[in-house]
Length: 208
Image 1 (tube, rainbow, N blue to C red):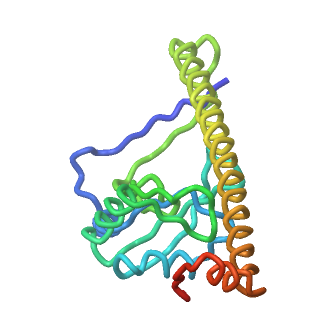
Image 2: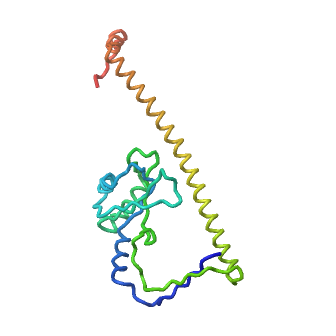
Image 3: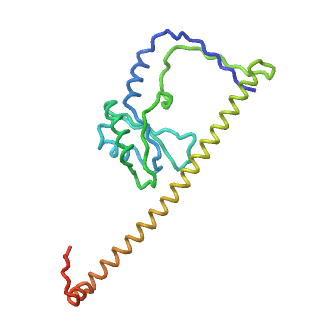
């Protein structure tokens, strides 16, 4: 059985003062995801403060993501600062706390806030829908479609995480290889081989 929600409210009613203030807050807030679980409020504030002034940071659950990916709502001092961050991250990837994937930013939506106030006064009446109800099949189709969308979103996220894990391993191997090269160069300089080679071949080398 399904729950049939009936909402009764006056669409012409003016939004409450509290909701108007909330809408202004949403305009100044950006949604940041692809965050590492190690990212704290202080770390995220410091990262975003280079683009403007952070007023508040609120971590939110990622319903379709894995437990290894986090998200946050970051309220800036102005809507312009938020737009600049979104533009900047679109042009230049930003890595935070060693996450192999760059964080992403987009405009926040009112539905992302669990503590959002009511826009209008309304009454919600819930009841179990009987299979004989005229809208039962429609409700069942909507439920099945929702489950399908959740499964598809989860599958896409898993593919993305798999690709980024491969990238992380590749980057780690490259870093280790470069580190070994620098160690080799330092070793050659330390044991005097560079000076002997310079003298033998009459080369002029920079000390730096």
